[in-house]
Length: 149
Ligand SMILES: [Zn+2]
Image 1 (cartoon, rainbow, N blue to C red):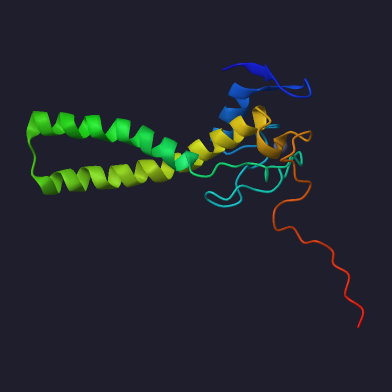
Image 2 (cartoon, rainbow, N blue to C red):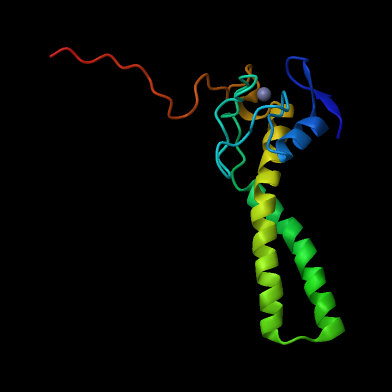
């Protein structure tokens, strides 16, 4: 992947945005934290103020994580079974924690990379000219005037 030009003509580097996101950093500046908690994406970058609430990662990060972990664990499991024929409990002791640990470690990586990809490609609301653009984060407090009695 390389730089693409979409919409307004301003270019964003897809590879660096995904790399920064995978490291849990802002895809724009690479300094601010992308997440406020384990998988909770911040509304804005604390360093440059770039809005992140436009991301729509949804089910893609778990899907990619399962794909990657499955391609690591299953070949190793088959290899160990064919070479050593261990008891079932040994398989469970090895592969269950490895699968769980890899999944938990990779989830923020894949989610950050996906948010970086969406930002770089100006997907969803990351393009201010998009009809999906929202000026405020979902659930942001809206000023309401009290009704007169
Ligand atoms: Zn930033």
